[in-house]
Image (cartoon, rainbow, N blue to C red; front, side):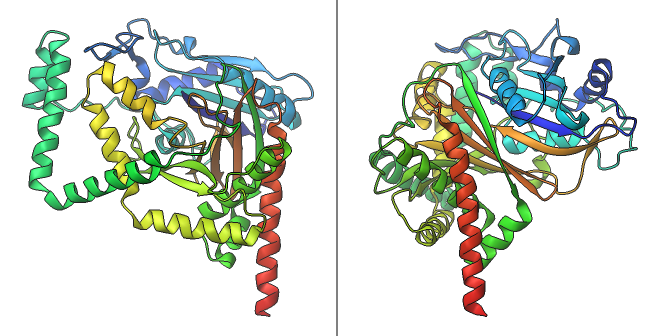
Length: 449
């Protein structure tokens, strides 16, 4: 359950790659803004009535979390993707703070990379952009100062009771506090409670009782990973989506639909008539929470019409589906379900958490995260592109993370190594899906003329 990716940089003006010590100093200077990065779990295991706590790691040393590696020759995409697959095949050490970063040199054209891996409990994809923007600068000559560690917010009265109670009594008390607050909030805001209840009901009826189809994309997975990527122009996708009456997200989902259609056909499978179901995370953060860690996302479940042979019809169905979901309360229902699960003791919470990632709910994950729109720099070098990685849930063999930066957009395809030897078929299908949108938009322009 680690997210992250590779940030690819041009050579510095002097043609050199930053040293490992320079990177470590830079990371050390910025950790003050993110104190959670110097904390570990009080226990690596979850269960019973006691929750692990975030505690300061008395052994914390940046040197243990920032390393260096060299890419094999010739240092192209193939070597980079294989290195990233191996890097994300290994879980993080739960006895230490749950993140690591590598300075990777040896890339072709003198380029280098910063590759990071962070456990999903620490932050979500949108939160990672806030961290990314804190590390980078919009000016290659800018030297950022050392961030000041923010003071923690004093606990409220009820939290203080839980904080000073003996364990596991504190855990039970904390759960009770959250439950009481949830009940009070529902009483004081009945209209919101009604919307949440309606959304939860719609989620359970539509997405739980009517399960996702069974395909080869949902089989037991191992620890090994594969990685591939597809590049696209953000400006072009915006133009194509607008010409066809949809959004960039619709264009992304349409390209992925063509990719999965190609993959299933190549495997000789029957295409599910109701479509593959994709879990599409939805950001719930306020603008003021850009640098907040933790997870503040909900999900929409979108049927991808892989059985439809006509590209234009596929795109139209996706546009209508996403619009209907945006107008519904399903995302609120998912958020409500997650909040209810959080009130349970760990032994029950684990079962509820697994159910939100069950193969019955969805077949694949497709997350689209917008990054900085302008060029960014680190150590005087320009950030050229970002390859994103999304974790794989149990029995989900493929996940797609899409990241936009500086008018570019990259599809990061992560997959289970043993069950997905044909990941390049999916990548080629996504490229073909983008070409289909290009042809459809050109046809629309010709008809208007």
